[in-house]
Length: 358
Image 1 (cartoon, one colour):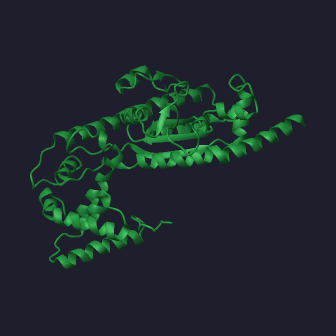
Image 2 (cartoon, rainbow, N blue to C red):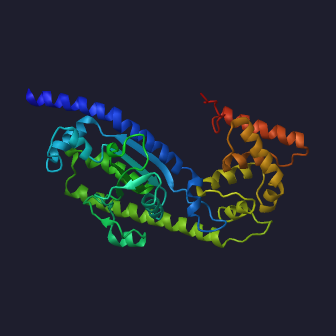
């Protein structure tokens, strides 16, 4: 009975802590990650003119730890929570908020590491250094040998950072430390499937299953490395690309062509941009440069700002520009630009700015 009362009291404390500290903090974290997910955030890391922006973040995931998981951890690790079911234990539990950043390619892990170490949003907890569940040789290849290497029997791969917000509505002494896990898309796929098959105590695999997990982990790692090699080859080809106006637009030459008209594109934008241009029979560099005049680009941007309150992103800009192929008069040009903008608003690919003044 006494333990039951203690649990109920603690659950009430955790609920209050969640409402006053964890939920507001997670809202602020989301806002930071939304900025980091934008391709233009990574322009500072471009290696040269005509190279696509790395734009490494594919997805960010968030969660607040369930109360029963908090209680289970306190009882499972009493050496870390000597105050047991208390507010002090909540402050010492550094994964009540969990964040996962998923990147496309393994070489982008070092990009996230560099950003987190120099972030305007986060500061790494000095008492808890980052941990990398990678072999030391792999960390060295990725330029991450400054992170301590750890191993898990299952073959799990990820990098864990304990951080807190640099700026928050909460006073500095109340800002919780939280965990950011960073991994590639392939590593996340393996981790999710491993979690489903073997994470829960009642489904711990026997020896042969453990061996298969380790084999699968190695195979996923090999696949991950091959995709990363293709990515690095693409970046190298972009860097060394040269072109004639008769050349067809490709993943290799398009960033350089766009840079000539003042547009920095992200690698994740290349496919939709080329798709939009090709769908309107704009396939060669010469055909593209013929329609991508400075006056037209300015006209499109001005109409976007006038109608939506925001400048167009690169995909919106190129999609609208593609509609101007073979347009004869300025009147028809403006008509098509506005039609494109309103079509995108109607289909939810862009949004009209709301008046939020008060």
